[in-house]
Length: 532
Ligand code: GLN
Image (cartoon, rainbow, N blue to C red; front, top):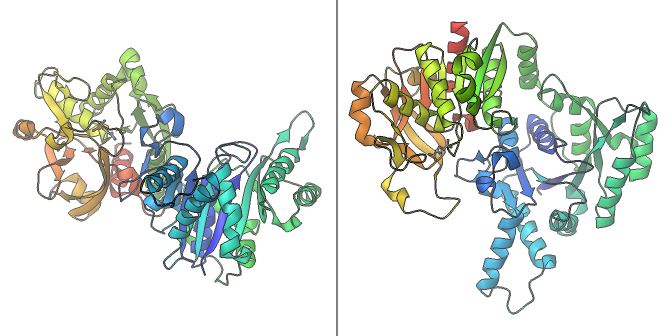
């Protein structure tokens, strides 16, 4: 019988439900359980693919090409259970599929309603993830309890135990216990209210995880327990972690969370193997080197816009026992202040993916600076396209070279749409998306890093290197170190006369893990350490 854990959040948004859910998944896997993670998002967009990074942070892409919430990134980095399209549903997707069924006449003349049709659809997508060889499904409900939008999801998880059995379901509610400086004490009222709201809906949480800045005293814990109708030991403290996100799972263990989960769900397991996470923290606390990396992107000031990039840099730091200071630099600033002022002193420069014209010239300046000053450079997706444009303009003399994404009439469309993508006008799902094979060529820095010639990497882009310019670039010194297996699409560009200049059309950041840094991130950071 598959067990189900539902994670809800209260009081404020951004309370860290994603990271906490992922940590729970990690701890259960560390006990040998087979875990599947799932996120249900209350917004109406069918997926986050069309939302601005300012609204939503990064779009996280899975192997199967689904464009998902960035919390799925936490899940993949923390756990090993496979994720797919069914790991992330939005209100929009749920309604879309119910409406499609209605159009097909599948409701046999009935009035289609939120209860039971929408809630049935939600329950069926929850059940689906737990169907095969799964011990525990962890379903995180996006949004905050009290939001109008999340009501159908909450109603569906209220109903869920009716068929699955209450003993097989566990409700975990994450809340905030703020510290009021003026009063000099922690405040439990918001938590009481938030749980009150859940109970009005018919959900009695089994475990409360309380985010707090200060330790919760015995008295405060008892008070929360009494008002929220749960045993005192089910009030779990989750103190803010300044040092590292990898402290979160360990602090949950210290507070007995995993043990209680297993007890409540009647799961008998071995005690968790915490060696990998302890090793990560050991390396982070005892760095052998210190370097700095500049990430030059359109939204660099926004901490979630390139979430997986920042995480992957950290993983490579862990791999190399190195502390990395990351400078997030808005590319548009380079256009006004110049590369030297903003980039001097960095040991490596990374230009991430992106869409839209703002800040492009600044990214080109960053590429040029890295190339000319021999600073290790890593270009990703749009970052690779910028590397190609910069090389065309400044080395090959292709004046005004550009991507047709930004200049339709450019004289030198070195990056352009492939023929079969020209026709597409509908938004969403029109890109080259998801895992695709690539061949890495012998003698390249990339093959050194990967150690193998055949790789699969995730894509999310429309534009490609224009093959009409291949010979000119090769003759002019750029090496196409990776291509699609048939050789038709450029996947990696390198400059051999440079300590480490590697630019890729795909997104390696979606496949990096704290215990297994992505080989190219590791190569990049290795080169930055060597430079220093
Ligand atoms: N805008 C570019 C394209 O669509 C790059 C996309 C990206 O960096 N993810 O091809």
